[in-house]
Each structure stands twice: as C-alpha cells, then as structure tokens.
Amino acid sequence: MKNQLSIGGRSLVFNFLFVFLSITGLIFILLGSHPSQIENFTLFNFIGYITLTLSIGGLILFQGNLLMANIARWLVGSIFIFSGIIKLNDPVGFAIKLEEYFQDGALAYRIKEWFGAPGFSLEFLQDYAFFLAIVLTAIELILGVFLIIGAKMRSVAFFLLGIMLFFTFLTWHTASCDPNSSYWDENTYPLNELRIQKILSNPKADPSIKIVDRTDLSVTLLEQKKPQCVTDCGCFGDALKGSIGRSLTPLESLFKDLILLYLTIWILIARKRIKPNLRNENIQYLLAFLGLIILLSWLFSWYFPIGFSLFLILGSLWMNRSGGPLLGNYFGSALFILVSFSIVLIYVLRHDPIKDFRPFAIGNDLNEKMTDGKPGVYKVEYLIKNLKTGDTRSYSDKEYFNDAALWDTLNYQIIKQIQKEISPEIPASIGMQFNPLLELNGLSVSSLNDYSLRTVFSKYPKTAVRVNNTETSKDSIVSWNTFNSSNFNKTNYSYLSMVNSDDAYSNAIPFRDIMNNYDQVVLIVSDNINTANWSDFEEWKEMIQLYRNNKVPFFLITRCSLKEQAEFKKNLGFPIIVLQNYDETGLKIISRSNPSMLILKKGVVSEKYTSYGLPNMEDLKSILQ
Image 1 (cartoon, rainbow, N blue to C red):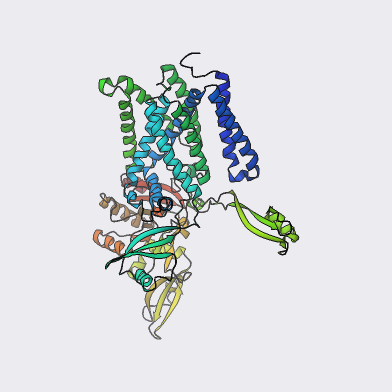
Image 2 (cartoon, rainbow, N blue to C red):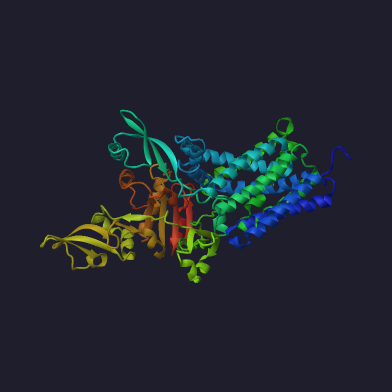
C-alpha cells in the first residue's frame, strides 16, 4: 500500500457511496426531528442514525476521510461565504441580534445556573455588539474563502471548529430555552428606590427574593427571575423572512449548526492532508461552489452574492500569486478580503442594505406585512394511567374526547397533557413593535389647524374633543367632526383637550391603524432625534415646506420622550407633527439610517431615503405630483 493514499482512499466508488449515505442520514435525522414529521419521528430517526453510523464506519474502513473532508469544505465554505455576505448586507441587524443574546436574562443565565454565579453578566458586551458583529462576519468570509481554495487548512480547521461551537451553543440555547423556568440573579440597588424600601420593610414576604448584602447606600438582592428566551436566532438575518416568509425555527437552526459542526469535524480530522488547490482543482471547486451559491441566491431572490463571492475567491487567488514578496501569500489574500469587505461595509452603513429584506422595503404593501402572520398548528396528547392495571398510554385529543370511559376518574388518571408543535406560529412581518402613537395631551388650539394633524383626526373615527360649557361650567366629550361645526362656538364653549374616545387608558391615536389609508404620506423616521445626522438640516426643512405647500401630510416618528420632542422642535425650529414609537426595535427595522424618510402611497412604500441619500427638490416634486 502507498504511504499516501489518494483522495479516493481504498475505493473511490465506495467512498462516494459512503459520503452520499452520510448526507442522506443527516437529512433523515433532520426530518425526523422536525415538528411537522412527528408521526414519522421513530422511522426517520432510525433510518437516519443507522445510515449515518454505517457511512462513518465505511469512511473509516475505506479511508475516505479526505474525500469526505473535501466535500465538507465545499459545503461549509459555500454556506459560510453566503451567510457572511448576508450579514455584511445588514451588519446593524446582526448586532441587534447579538445585543439580545447579551441581555442579562438571555445567554448569561446559563452561566449563572451551571457555575452557581448569580452575579455573572454579559450586558457589558452590548456596547461592543456592533464591533463583534463586524469581526464575526469578516472571520466568516475569510474562513469560507480559505475553505474553498484549500488555504492554511491546519489553522482554518481549528478556527472553524471554534466558531461552529460558538454558533451551535447559541442555537442550542435558543432551542432549549424554557420561558417558564427560573434562575437566581444577583443585583445591587440603591436604598432610596421605593421597591427596595418595600422589600426591606418585610424581607420574608417574597420567597423569590433574598437579601445578600446591605450597606448605607445600597442593597444586594438574590432574585428568582424568568429567562429572556430569544425566539429567533437571526440566522441569515432578515433575508429568510423577506424571501421565504419566515426565519428558521430555533430547532431548525440548531440542527443546521449541528450538521455544519459534523462536517467541520471531518475537515479537522483530515486537515494535515488537505493541500492548497492546484489550478484544475480550483476550477472544479469554483464550478461546484457556483452551483450551490446560485441555488442559494435563487432561494433568496438576490444575485449580488454570486458576483461578490467570485470576486473574493478569484481576487484571493490572484493576490496569492501576484502580490509580490510582501503580499504574495495567504496573508495578502486575507487582506484582499478585508479591504473588499470594508468597502461594502462603508456603503451599507451610509446607504442602507444593498438588498432590503425588511418589511419596509420599497414596493412592499405595509397592510399585507401587518397581517401576514399565521397561527401555529399544535397537537394535544394525554398521558393517561389505567388505575386498575397500572398501564400508562398516550391518547390523542380526538381519542380522548371520543372515549367517554377515559373520563372516569375512578379508573383513569391523566398524568400529563402534552402539546406538540406541528408547525410553528409565524408572526406578522410588522408586529406591534412598530406602533407609532399621536399623543393628544398638550395639543393646543393653534396646533389643531396643522394640515397633517387634521388628516389624522379625520381618518380616526374615535377622535374626540373635551370642551367646557362656559354657561354651565360642565365638561363634555364630543366627536371631532361635531366640534368643528357651528354648534360649539368660542363664545359658549372652550377647548380643553383632544381625547381618544375608544381608549380610556391611553390618550393617544394609534397611527398604524390609519397609516395605510393615505393616498400619500411622508414619514421621517429617527430612532433618536438627539443623535441623528441632521447635517443637511436646511434641506430637510426645505422638503418639509414643499410638503406643506402641496398639502401632503408628513410626520416625524421617534422613540424620544415628549420633553425631548419639544426641545428639539424649539431649538431647531422643526415644524412637524411628531409620533412616538416606544419600542426602538420597531424603528430600526424600517431603516438603519438615522434619520430616514419614507413616502407611502396607499400603504405601499413608494420611496425610501437615508440621511446620506436625500432626493433633490426637483425629483421630490416629481414624486409628490
């Protein structure tokens, strides 16, 4: 036997068969664990694990680990490159997802539980989430390209294993997180808080709270809390939602990462035998890579990844061969990837994602995006014990309700009611995180003449006015339309405030209920008006005046407080009606730019601009007409 076996091992034909069986086994295991195939759970898992075990044994016996590793690096490399481009397209979105994991009750609670460290926290990483998102995306792209061209495989294999263990841990945490469980959390609070004073006055009243330490200024509490489960791992960002209508479920994400981890282990085993591609091998890998990347691009309806990924791979090969004594190596290849990465990164940060997969993308009907959710499908089973025989059996809800004998509590006892998910709930693309409100408190009589404001009142039938009868000194609430009539003149009635007659608990009008009824409406969106880029402020004011002259309603949506809004309008002389959206995430899904501008026509996003790409006045006049 030769000292160095070829890529085919002892038998190229058999090893190809074992590779095929290995992938087939993974597919059956994945299907068998999916909630929609619950009826075939046992059969699919039996076939999957038997096939996978046979394939692993065959690959070891026929020494096909190099063949398996080369196919694995093609698959993993292609997915890493595509996934990296998806993240590069929207790095802010990836950072937002990392921030969710770094919340104190999210990923950190696992460490608190496992190591008995209730004071442990990852919240400090939230300030670095954007930096980490960029670093992880760059690493993902470099690893993907190096896997395809066979570069530095000894180092790449270990980096790949590390990042896959990290991602697998995240998806395992997401899939296994139980929102009904609890954990002990340690926090320090100042003594002057009202809640703390109540706890200290009766420390044994709540068994879920224990006093650990106390000083003259603060108290440290051990509190039992519910975990903050991240329900969406954010795999492939918003791209899956925007293309196939939903993200991967936590369980699907976990199995996706387990499959990639399995393939990574084969690469790790064969890392010393994988050499940089020869010219013919590069052609073969590029053709195979193109086939998979074209399929993924078609699935996501976005073909930029095809050209950009080819540019990265070919550019890396060119740099390695033509970079001279300093850059003619794989360091030069990595530098080429980083420079290309940085150029795209700067563009998307200034001008929003190249491909907008979010629900507020140009051309989307927002009314559809607010109502495109689907309820989950569940199957209920009852685990029932026969009290006479002692046997325990599972019954479907149909079997249980059709068999009256099972209701006899003298003979049967329900041990457990089990709800199994057949298909997950798909929430609407635009949920209640986006819920801009027009706060009615403090609106003066003079402000009621604002055209944009009056359009809101006219479109919301529950808009009412609280007035005072100067003759009787009694207050009354009348509809907006009635208030505008001659029945309520200034001589006999005085205006007190605007109210929402439909909601006694919130004196505000939900703008999302009427937003899609406008023939045309302009929205300026700013998550934080104090930190927004108002460098072209005069241009913004000029545009607003154009809207006024053309009787086009326009609004500013922000999460900032009423006080901040008032100071902003006073200091900058910003003549605009402000809507408040309390959830900052609901605004960040609209645009990553702060501020940005949307023009809606009957609820359809007609135009969308970032602060770095405002339209000129002539184009805007044409759009508004």
